[in-house]
Length: 286
Image (cartoon, rainbow, N blue to C red):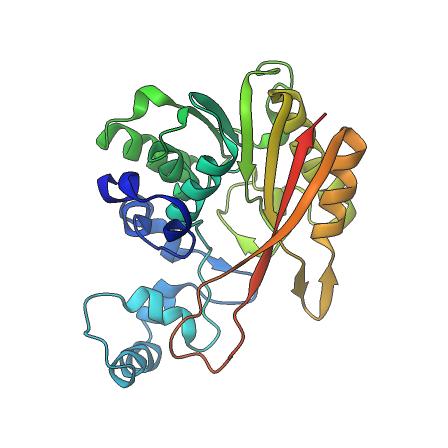
């Protein structure tokens, strides 16, 4: 965290520093998976998958230093639920926040954006919302262990259940990466949005729109709201999450300032030459 705290500017954009810190407290991330795939833990426990992962590392010339769980994401239909890189999160906090900013994250997840906020010199308080009890408790433990619990308020509720007036105009910046409809299964609890709203339009109306309403209500006038999201294809059908997010944000009063793209890490061992990109939607409260 100290090393991330000292990093500045563009050197943060593609840096993975501090990701392992989040995973130390969120080891259950490796037991979870995207839809129609298996978790890295299941792949680890299958000898053919584990051997393939080790072979990929050997062929790439890397030392075997316990990174099997990352490499296992390359083998035979394995995909873990993703976490946001703390360094890139810090880059965005530094870019859009003023000094002593209170920031809102309506999908805290596995602590990547939380760590980025705590390593930014511009953030004074982080308000994080997440429905998963295990993930919520892991973020509490991380905050206490790393001694920044006095700068964090963690709420163990679905974003759509949070009282929209409780935090009215209390934050200077909002930044999140919400669930991509039913693409990733972050927990088995019934409070998960993919459990509550299995029909797409239902998910848009009852989760996505209410999440954006909460962001709008919580932000002060003139503040920025960043949403990292991407269209997803499930069983051959594409769901237009980006356009739906823009449409809903405009309907509650946000102004779309820009739509940027950032590159995901290209993982060694893959045959794809192109690097996948995701949208970063930049809104402003008028």
